[in-house]
Amino acid sequence: MKKNLSLGSVISLGSAAVITILTLFVPWWGMKFYAPQYQEGLDIIVYPTTLAGDIDIVNALNHYIGMSLFSNESFPELQFIPYIIIGMAILIIIVAILRNKSLLFGLITLFVLGGIAGIWDMYRWLKEFGTNLDPMAPIELEPFIPPIIGENTIANFVTHSYFTYGGYMLLIVFILLVFPLWRDRAK
Image (cartoon, rainbow, N blue to C red; front, side):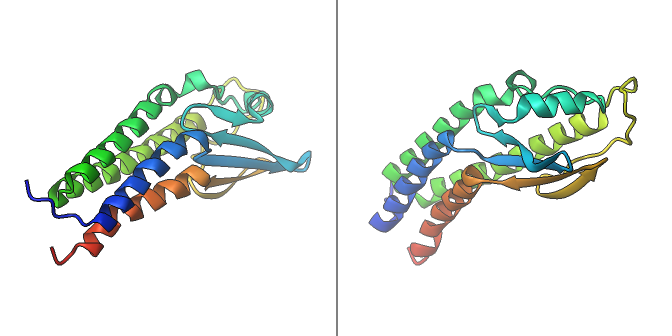
């Protein structure tokens, strides 16, 4: 097999693998809720393995509009995402060791498809939680879909959804995966 990736490209891929593993330990996405009674804001913070933040308070408030409870059990993906991340890091290392540009194209495609699947899954859950409201809830609201990124107003709450450290780190991983294609374009 022809080794057609340069040493610089191998270093780029090795860095991508390390950053991929590091994303296990930082939050990827968050949502902050502001209201007159919560001017400091309430947080839902999503790590690839768990939910954090003011989950109990948000759940208590969501009860009034009939929204399902947020919990780690509500999102089964949190149990297997770490294995996907570790698997992706291993694949990156394999491509770096083999130094094959064709395999790198496949790896980038897999990474992009994983990103698309992740965004779709987030949208699916946001839609499920915002549109599947209990009709017997004390406060009746029209169904809604919170945005993945951006601002939304629900009753007297203004929510801000955003990617955080892990999301940006995954963007850096993507750049480090694509960099060898540019660096070794003449090979």
